[in-house]
Figure 1: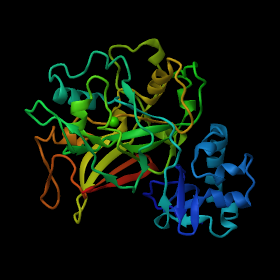
Figure 2 (figure 1 turned 90 degrees about the vertical axis):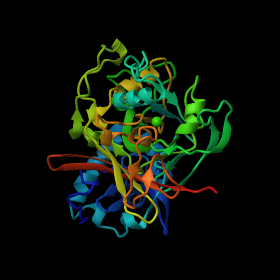
Figure 3 (figure 1 turned 45 degrees about the vertical axis):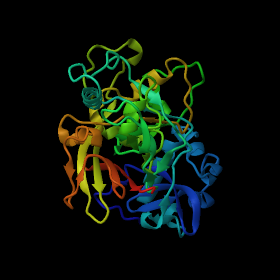
Figure 4 (figure 1 turned 180 degrees about the vertical axis):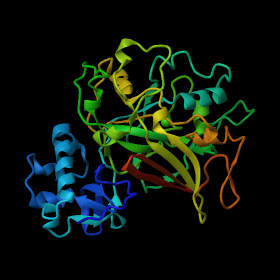
Amino acid sequence: MVHIPINSDFSIHNLPFGIFSTPGKSPQVGIAIGAYILDLTALSHYHEFDFDNSVFQQVFLNDFISLGKQKTSQLRKDIQNWIVDKNSVLYQHEGLFVAQSDAKMHLPVRVGDYTDFYSSIEHATNVGKMFRDPENALLPNWKHIPVGYHGRASSIIPSGEPIFRPKGQVLPNGESQPIHQLTERLDFELEMAFIIGKENKLGHPISTKEAEDYIFGMVIFNDWSARDIQKWEYVPLGPFLGKNFASSISPWVVPLEALDPFRVNGPIQDPAVLSYLKYDGMKNYDLKLEVGITPENTDEMVVSRSNFKYMYWNMVQQLAHHTMNGCNVRVGDVLASGTISGKNESSYGSMLELSWAGTKPIKMHDGSERKFLHDGDTVTMRAFAERDSIRVGFGEVSTKIQSNQ
Ligand code: CA
């Protein structure tokens, strides 16, 4: 039977879905379990599921997710039972388990649309202090609206795919004329994102009560940013080329139901929110997050430890707000949290905040300093939850910054 190490992110309680390939297998659907992947595409050749098996012949999870939670949750329960049963179908056939170390991971979903929120009060306050007014860091709308913008889906890339330092227009300090050049302020943003699993019709809002039914699962999301480009371009219409050159996601989609044991209350929202944003129950999640930077030829330095539980606006509020005007969401859409910063300086979710706009450089193990990211650096984000003896993790999203000169 498959061995699951005690500290594995991919415990029997997790069973996240992803798309993998090996030198001998074209991209197919799998479930991470311990250090292995259960090949669902191969399993579907031996086992007749009570749904259309062709959902496992696809190179994205969209069709599988579209089956609906009743089917996808039942599949997870069946597999949980089969994993611990040595007589189950999983152990009657060769080749159903693939070592993760032998596999390449791909984008899990075909992303139609991507929205980025701005829902961490600590992050919004820090950025407001740096970019605007230290005394009135939050804009008047912030505690009333889960602020967000529509991002770019085409440049969402899987973990392992390198990014290139982008060029853009910047206004040098003290100058009145912009120049165009490679960004000198390349940054990460530590975020989590949820993936839509059910569609609403155009003109039909999703309430906070219904919202969880529309959320299939979550991934780690690194929303790459070029701060000098962003600073010059973002007024009045918001982020554009400072953001749309890449966003990296972790390859395993952790179903929302696997995160149930880690629900916690969110921060108290004061002033009270409008009625369509009110919700019942615990909608925040205690997910431990960390970010490491690995300069070329040096060990990784963990630069931030944060937690998803700090979010001021939760996912059901974000989705209710997104659709309150009748906007429709589609299966595979990605809605990201916005940078997740905690209360203290070691829990900030971007270099912008960690180095306080470049005024407090961070030392790496090799003695070099980082205000922002250097070519050759690899940024790795991890997320996991642990409670009693249950551990559910996301693995990691790891990306190297390649020089484009
Ligand atoms: Ca962002």
